[in-house]
Length: 177
Image (cartoon, rainbow, N blue to C red; front, side, top):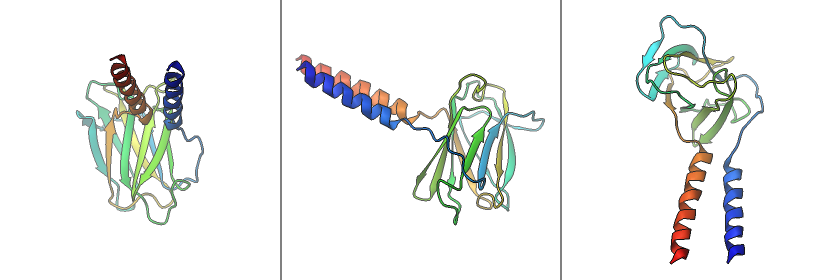
């Protein structure tokens, strides 16, 4: 019985470890999104963890915001429509000087960019902090495209870890009878 439990535990740990991913590869610079923290004198104050913006008529733009939620943002998930003619993922670049990691995923024609990781000099977006979203590239993003952003979304590994804990609790409860 103990070997079965040990085997189950090893399978769950392997599944949780397999769900963690980071993408350190740098792709050609088009289209590009950057989250950074320069000084901003006319930033839009954000009082919600959900917000959005629209790219310019040429698919670019520099958008300034201030975190007025009173909460430290440990990650930021940005979603928009993929740019036709630019293959995913090799044509897309994301970067940040406030988050340690940036990863991208594609679901249909929606690209989701997750900025995460607060270690060392990467502080996340702290309360009252100004930050910019910079949309650039030789051809940019889609013209007049809506971008949506959510701060502090659970990361896939966190969801897997919580699911594993719940499954272990239920299994123990069932076998304890």
